Length: 216
Image (cartoon, rainbow, N blue to C red; front, top):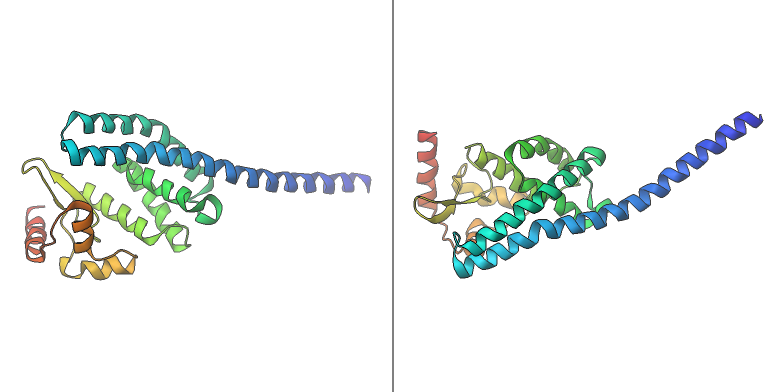
């Protein structure tokens, strides 16, 4: 009887300790992800600001890009470890910014990493642990990197030969806003104008999509 009681007590303490560790661990992850968020976003935001002032190919922008790549050597392994260990955690565990940070770091990763975690993100989205709009961004990012048509029109590329930004070709451009609405994104024309100062020309994009299909 005494032996059984000891086993019960041991199990009780194990469970109690696990729950206690989990609560502390969540707070720890929130702090870690806050640091990662700034390591990822600060050089990107600064590069965007400097691009407006000095141009995309300026030394000032290149310096921020180097800082980002250096930071990525820290942020990407940490985020991959978090996802591999716990799965894609929702806002209920790591908060809104923490959840967004997981997405941002994977969104900025190499293609192989993005392809690896895209199915994980899809499953998390089904459970409500990923914002549909963030999944849409990663779907488009992977498609554009793989040389495929994007779905939601979220990816704008810089074309060195013309030195201009333009939307990566889209599946069925005429109905892109319906698809965007389904994942919580606003009209593409407004997004392009506000974020990139680009005009949405449906006729032009229909032609670009048609040309893309012929030349791929």
